[in-house]
Image 1 (cartoon, one colour):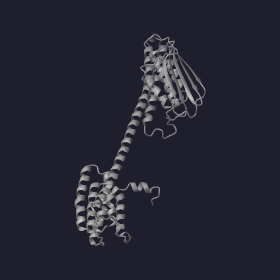
Image 2 (cartoon, helix red, strand yellow):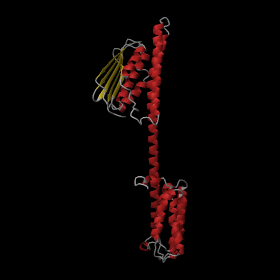
Image 3 (cartoon, one colour):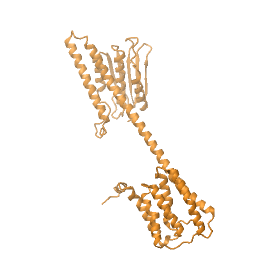
Image 4 (tube, one colour):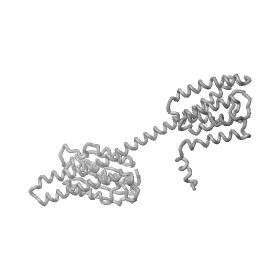
Amino acid sequence: MISPRQAPGWWHRLDVTVRDLPLGLLLLAGSFLPVLHDKGTQVGDLPTRPFDALAIAVLGLECLPLAVRRRWPAVSLALVCLGFAVDQLRGYHSVAGTALPIALISTGVHLERHRRAAVLLLSVAYVPLAVALHRLGSGGETASGFVTFYLALVLAWGVGAWQRSTRAAEADRRRRVAEDTRTAERTRIARELHDVVTHHVTAMVVQAEAARYLTAAPDRLDQTLAHVSDTGRRAISDLRHLLDLLNPDHGTDTGGGRTPPAGRLRTLVEQTRRAGQPVEFAEEGTPAESAGSADLVAYRVVQEALTNALKYAHGSPTSVRVRYGEKEISVKVGTDGSGPATASPGGSGRGLAGLRERVAVLGGEFSAGRETDGGFVVRARIPVGNPA
């Protein structure tokens, strides 16, 4: 037994021909109702005659092709037009004539090729039908009546063509939205990879370079190499976490969040210190329980700033200040000007540009630049609670 909720899904799983057939059967059955006799379409002034054996075939020819009006629109329209022409020439004037505008609308929507040829052919075919009806009639139907009926048929085709163009425009809009979404997602993934790989690899390179000068101190050398290994393992862990985010099944459970767990900022600072960068770290306030993406963006701001300090101002004192408020997270990462004069803790600017976009998406503010004393400061104000 199919429940009412399952009925729509069950119906749409049927073949399109099966779904289109009931309308044709309904028109066919309605044509034989006595109350609807002589209530159908009439072109010309031929007298209405009662149904005979031929009428059954003619009505079937008009109605039943509606079952294939979406699968084979040209075939459906040709058969309906033929049935309609015989209907009018024989004077049945049945309700089945309603199938003609339905077929025209459907063909206007679903016909893929030779659309102009179909319109021209139907227009040409209408002329001999109008002439034949005029000659067989008593002459009461004027030329304006035939023109009016032709314009009504053109209107039916126009309705179908309009629906087709509307659907095409909607499909194009959805395609462009999907492309924009994919592009935005690729950009986000590229930023995540940049943040993860650049920071960890920079730390490993700096530690490895330092290890070259520690061959005479085995204990310190062993400690430095251990730090390199730890950094590599963290890089692998972060990359695995990022790849998990790309899994379609990711996020179906409660543990699929993107925000780094509590304490990751301290771990990040400690890792940078082990790479030889003196970092002063301070946190104020308590992180909000539902900060949305703000925690992750704050983490990325600190990570990118420390990576740039490590690469371009190695050894220069660096300070990290993070303040958690009720409505926003404030981040300030500064490196003093004691490093090389040519160094620029801002790096190439690509990572900072990505951070500026991330913060802007959440409605926050971001700035990065050199201070008057020669130091470089990164500031961010990130509203909390935004899930973007």
